Image (cartoon, rainbow, N blue to C red; front, top):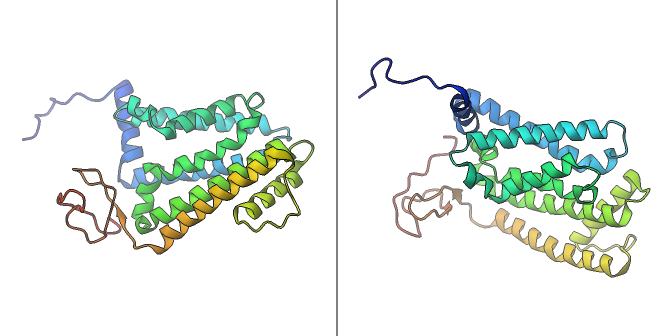
Length: 266
């Protein structure tokens, strides 16, 4: 039964805006797909800026770029809140806390300079975003989701440690050479290569090296498991919420509920 002409009132104001944003962020139309891909490209550009921040922080244009990125992050946060069905539930998610923290470091770049290296957590947040995986699934990358997330976790940790080492051990008068040294030390430590040509002084340096090695090895193991163990698809069971299933599964192995896993590319 369809409503009679004139029964539906046109959407106005904030209701129209929320409906429009919801269609763009969560829709499956070609226009929504193009919008989601544009958001992903902008996110990766922002992440690239975060990685390059230690090198760019001494340039004259840094603050202009920093505040421009802050405006983009704030606009994206507001848009996602408006597009959500429950703003409070979205704000309770760890990815929202990460975005709020990143926005604070962008708005107060000098006061929070020592915490700027944590901005790379935006990459971790992006890897868990439906805005990222909805278009990527359409590109046939669904089977590689767990592997990609494992790689993102490793890269995120790599740059967090690099930023930490640079900020607290190499930063004073170091410039790009100091950042490269910090990256070199981090890669050598995480891979347990341990050339020993660059070491961190004192007890704090030794503790940093220990944490980097332990967590780094764990992330490498996680990546190896994602690459070599049997492939599964991500599809949430509507009854028990189990996420991972065999590609040809008909029933959920946890609760027995009938599944309707879509074919690849749908």
